[in-house]
Image 1 (cartoon, rainbow, N blue to C red):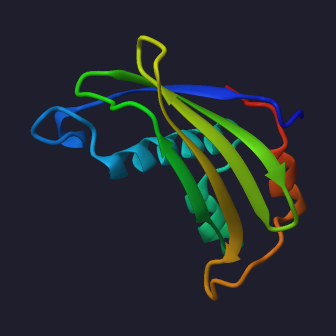
Image 2 (image 1 turned 180 degrees about the horizontal axis):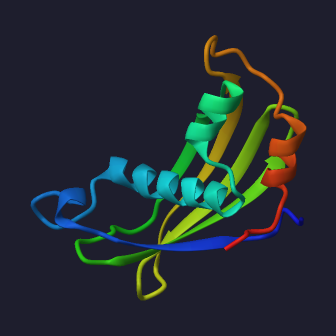
Length: 140
């Protein structure tokens, strides 16, 4: 797989995501980005609860650099992209963008995540099978 593979997901902004003026709360952008990364993993048959329950591994965000460009608003349809940009022994990095239905760039984020042992929170290398799944093409 090329690290240039981009996956795209669509989500709706609901009232619960917004303030009284109908603008998405700043922290909710991270929720939409997280949802897209989770869906990105699921496309590769990586289920986070299985990682923890079967392999004692959790996948945690260790850094997030978010840039807010324009506000997302209630009832917007958001297109959130996810692209893995780097994979190392125990860490992975992603670049993501969020656009509204008009194609306007709303936010970007660079994410770094690490593989940890669930019972000790110590860094652990990705098992080979997981690394292969991370590098695989989307399955759906």
